[in-house]
Length: 290
Image 1 (cartoon, rainbow, N blue to C red):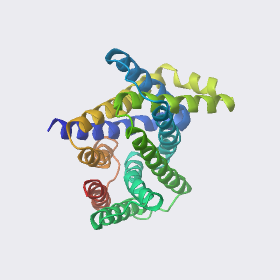
Image 2 (spheres, rainbow, N blue to C red):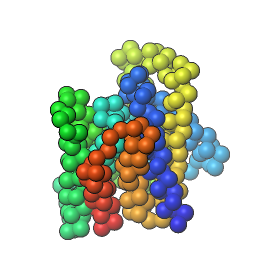
Image 3 (tube, rainbow, N blue to C red):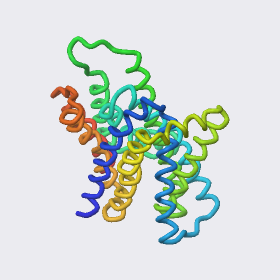
Image 4 (tube, helix red, strand yellow):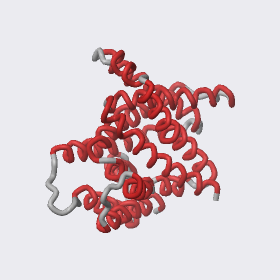
């Protein structure tokens, strides 16, 4: 029960975190917010790691964890934040929940792993549900260019996050060190984003914008809840229940963004959008539990 509750709590943390990050993504940009998220999250995990002790990991695993962080967290999360600015938390979370679907399809295409009928059914349900939510709009609303940008970035985020998971799993095969892996992945992603900003001459401007008191306060809260709390609770969930069950419960993040959007942000949520969201989450759960 502890594992299941922790996994659900992690999903809630990510739902809250997405909504908290949205304003600052629009104000200072997706790369800047992702850079702060990495600095803050990596610092907290590094302190904990130094307290509990640093386990031995071979060079191959370190390289794979670092590569996974650059792919999934630096590139994937930056695209996720761009989608967040254009689509809002709910549609962004729903598109991002397709990462396990893309990971399964990638394993089938490139590694020859067969898909069962249940997995195919789950993929179909998830794709249909997400497609319906993405295109359902209030009556009379027209598609916007921002929608196309957000959808493209959301799909890109799911693809890069799926690729990061595949690389991370390869590293875990030789080193089961969840806490250290978090530090290595976040650290590599943060260094990549900082170097990218430095080369483009944007680092000073990004840091200056991030550390203004009002922005800093909001980002600390969002990173504490969404990054540190979400990852920490997810690790507790995986440690106390099966990884498939933990991943399935984590995929319920879009279900938490629905009531937040409706009750807190006062956004209009139609019954059709709610039903399509349930279909998509159910599809991801079927895929992970098959």
